[in-house]
Image (cartoon, rainbow, N blue to C red):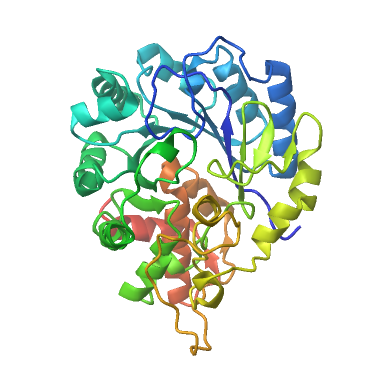
Length: 405
């Protein structure tokens, strides 16, 4: 199979203690079990995921996943199958016992939502007074217990100017990564106004530079923003972001979402269902869905059709669908005007396969969870530049010494 899912996001519940302005799931305070799969059904889905790719990253999110009484039973079961387990939470329920439970039950990392260093904005956006303080305290607890976490910020017209402050705050709190998510207007987010295309370009340009600024200290990435790679190429055609990087929108190519009811969609912001895991095998859905096939063999429309960055970018398919009602439509947030006469296409620069010795692989596995992919690409890039075909523990030790760590 040419395409294997390496990242799965699973909304295990619609229940939530917050009422976030942008929620695509329209989560709320619901009765336990409302619109949820049973523990037994959930474990069967985990079996299906592990059989398709036992090394995939599985994100348990919601709603608020910690409101499910069996959340840690599910994380433990998934970890036992070899999956890389992440919990995506608003952070308000993280305390000492919860952090210990996460570690005990196989959680590799935690994603925490924080939308501003201004507590009043965050609380208003999340719909709960005091949410900011609880979330910030949760980060301190995770750091104390050595559990890797990343900060996730959702960009709106009200907070986009505060992105540098959130990134710096995340770094000072000890986050391993800071992901900046760009709003796709679905769910309650349909009532919100996006930032402009010009502001979008400005922010992505800043993030490419910020990624370089924090390199080796914390990973900085733009999410739901495939134009990130186009801008990286414009600023530096040799950018490491283009070398071995995942290109463009990964919905349906290496990523899918599972709803609380077991439906599969290409990503959380696409409501288009391609199958239900209580009725159909994951392998059949992943291999046979016409919608997923179209995402893997895209026939873009509008400016995306003629764009020389089609391979590395391709636009956000969820945003195109929401705006044009066509999965292959052009992304309205992109200001780039393709040069139709330009025959050459910008391509991601794939690295030749590098062999890792057992000792080097063991050292890589000790790298903090959210940094592992970035470190692996960096080491392989170094090996290629030196004309090496194999990564050894000595090479990793040398690079660690150079980084001063």
